[in-house]
Length: 142
Picture (tube, rainbow, N blue to C red):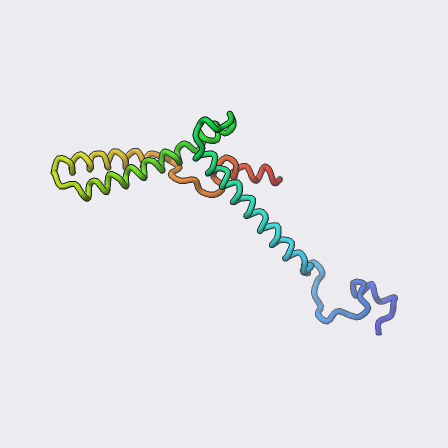
């Protein structure tokens, strides 16, 4: 049995530790659980902010406030890219099913124009953490 005067040597325990481990290397068991909970809530917040960005971009102009219109201008390239992508799919379908040579030339030219427009867009899709709401999460959380 350890005497009371030696308790300070063993970090306030009543017996010597089983393993000699430096105290700066020990993490309390609840710390990992707490970090996991914080990470889970942070990811939920990121997903919610991304959903807000997608919702703002998809709303019609009439329903938006001034700030919403600014956000929509920011996301206008993504919306334009979606329209061009659907137009490109339509032109490809027309090109496949057209029989006349004149129609084939016309749809091929239209498809090349659409591909050219699509190649000049910088942001072709709204990726997570790139929208105006989701990108400002770091400022909100600090």
